[in-house]
Image (tube, rainbow, N blue to C red; front, side):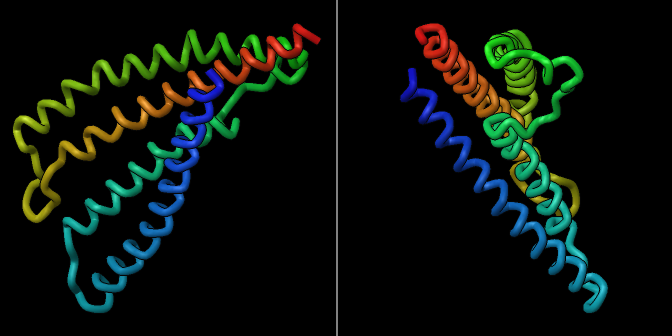
Amino acid sequence: MEKISYACDKLTQWMGKASAFLAFALVFLVLYDALSRYLFKMGSVSLQELEWHLFALMFLLGIPYALKHDKHVRLDLFYQHYSKRSKRVLWILCNLLFVLPFCAFVIWHGYDFALMSYLQNESSDSGGLPYRFLIKSAPLLAFFLVALQALSEVIKASILLRKESSC
């Protein structure tokens, strides 16, 4: 189980780095787009769409990374007063009862959305990007990665609970 958790964590770490790279690339893409539009009066619909797609990918790939590093939004009103053991049990329950079902819901309902786009070879209108199904598949990938990371978090918390119980 620890190996599975380790592999999920490594994949999430790599996706976090990819997300950071996309942020870096997005800065230069927006700079290039702004300069070409305002200095040279050359605009590009496909370039602007690429900016939106990179931003979406950056955000979506950052979600599992935030979960791994415990940097997601949490209401700490009660949580801060719990013992470590209670926090771990709550963490396991939240991942199993909320995160994983939500990921399954998004993947289940997003699959047809992405599949129809692929089957229709959907592309953007007038000068936009082709292969729109790629960006429509991104939430599927992202929530699959979130589900993997949630499983990793459950495994790690369970291992810590067992170690604490045996002491």
